[in-house]
Image 1 (cartoon, rainbow, N blue to C red):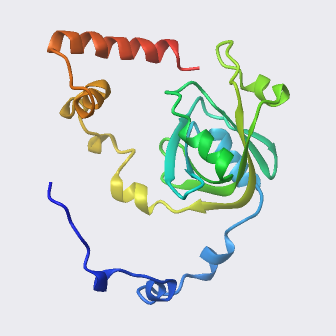
Image 2 (cartoon, rainbow, N blue to C red):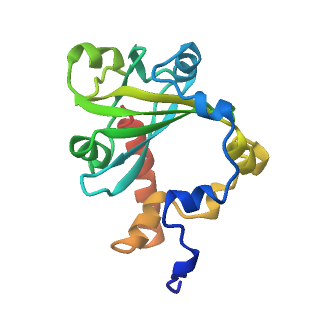
Amino acid sequence: MSSYAVAPEHVIADEAGLRALFEPTHDLARIKCLDRLDPHAQAFIARSPFLCIGTQSADGRADVSPRGDPAGFVRMLDAKTLAIPDRPGNNRLDTLSNIVANPRVGLLFMIPGFDETLRINGTARLVTDPEILAPMTVNGKQPKLAIVVEVREVFLHCAKAFRRSKLWDPAAHRDRSEMPSLIKMILDQTTGAPDPEEMRRRDAGLEESYKNSMC
């Protein structure tokens, strides 16, 4: 794929230029942002098995990472504090090292079948307090730490993106076989994939590792 450069005259360089392209927002969009978890936000979080967390490194590199567990896996410690368990992953620690460097985070909560989402912005700390971690034990495995978020902004987000994308519509789901397995794609991108028989063994090993290391 050839490189692409945007012509400078088509780049929006300031907020005034940005806002000139759009109609003013309506009053409800301005006032809907809360500074705590009201009953509706609490009910949404209690039903959510999945969230994305956005972080930035000290030098401004952005990252978004998924987090998932049975619905209700995020603990609400009080109306302004959340705790997210850190389950085993690939140990790159992108999200966690970013939080150490820059505590500002953004969360996007989703519920399967719901077209609306819940957005939360706040500041995070990495916590090893056993009183927080013990209730997050799954299958006898307690997380090593939790991401504790002090809530600063809370607001519900409308359904337009999910309805446009048809994310939950089974008729719009794609066949997973359209693309190679995860490990095949990563090997193609890095060291090169082995022969098909060895690739089948590695795919089976990945599935087995999912079963053994989910918690």
